[in-house]
Structures are given as C-alpha cells and as structure tokens.
Length: 182
Ligand code: ADP
Image 1: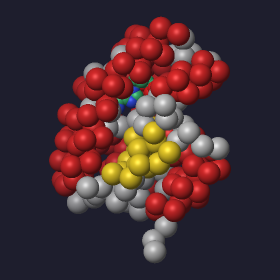
Image 2: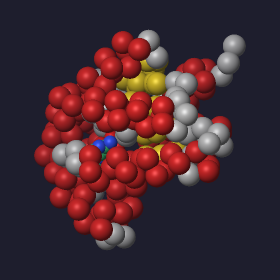
Image 3: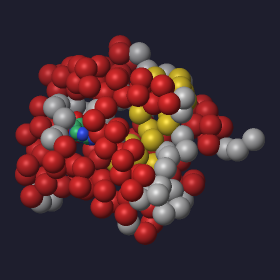
Image 4: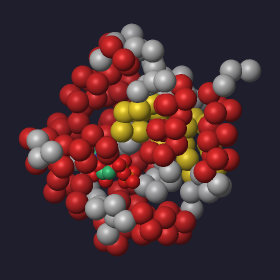
C-alpha cells in the first residue's frame, strides 16, 4: 500500500495504525531519516541539511535504502510506504523495483487536507523540522514535486481519495474500508 498526502495530512499516524492492524511493516522514509539524523549515521549526516530546510533528500540517499527495505523478509506479506514516492521519478523507480522483486501494491491512497488546516496542524505539532519557514517550503515542494505523483497513480486508475480533514477515527475507518475486501 502506498500512502500519499501533504505534510501534516496525518498519513504518518494513519499509516502506523493501519500497519499495526494489518501486521505489516510501516516504512516511513521521514522516520528513517529522522532516526538516522538522531543517531548521526552517515545517512543522517548527509540528509540533515535537506530535511532541516524542508528540501527533498537526494535520490542517491534513499533509493538503495527503499530497495533493501522491500527485500527484507518481513516485507513479503505486505507493507505500507509512507513518504515514498515523493516525486514522479521515485514513483517510476518504485514500479521498476517492484517488477524486479515480483512484488506490487494493491492500494494507493491520498489523504487530502486543505492548506490552511495543514499549516495549523504543523505549527501545533512542533517537530524539529516544523518551523514556519520549513513548513512553507515543504508545502511548496509538495505542490511542485509530489502533487504530480497523484496524476501518475490517477492515470493508472489505482488512486483512492480520502478526506483527511475529519476526526482521526473517521479517517481510520475510511482507510480501513478501502483495504477491506467486499
Ligand atoms: P512530512 O510529510 O510531514 O513533511 P516526512 O516525515 O514524510 O514529513 O518527511 C520529512 C522530511 O524527510 C521531508 O521534508 C524530506 O526532507 C525528507 N524525505 C522524506 N521522504 C522523502 C523522499 N521520498 N524523498 C526525498 N526526501 C524525503
């Protein structure tokens, strides 16, 4: 499953919940990067400046990592990707990778939330990369580079839109309905 949505849309929270109830790995590139930054690993040191500015981390740092993660045995029975793909180039990389691994995704969901609500939520969250400047840069990067990913999956006919501007449990129920057969 692929989770799309702007920063602050709640995709991290919802992806974690859904992954837990489906007992499949929740693969969040943002989490992986934040942990690497905290642990000051080589990846963390290389990614830090980008994350702090609200810019995308270069593909060289992330593509190999996604490849390795999807090859792990626990990914065999399913996974939720959160924060990846974030560009059309990453989306086509993912398609090629999945074909190579004889794997695929069943659902692509987009959590839609109006900009004004996103800004409010991000200001309240107060994560380290949630400063006023970074927030507006991340929203702009989303509009420029990530929104086209919606068209990419929309054209394939695999995109599900979920209204993310609802109470958390309502969003969880809507997502659960998408992945529940029948
Ligand atoms: P949010 O969606 O709230 O911005 P994330 O946790 O998804 O938060 O991402 C935090 C930061 O990590 C991004 O602003 C970006 O710098 C980096 N990042 C995460 N995923 C990717 C990706 N797929 N490609 C490039 N950079 C990424």
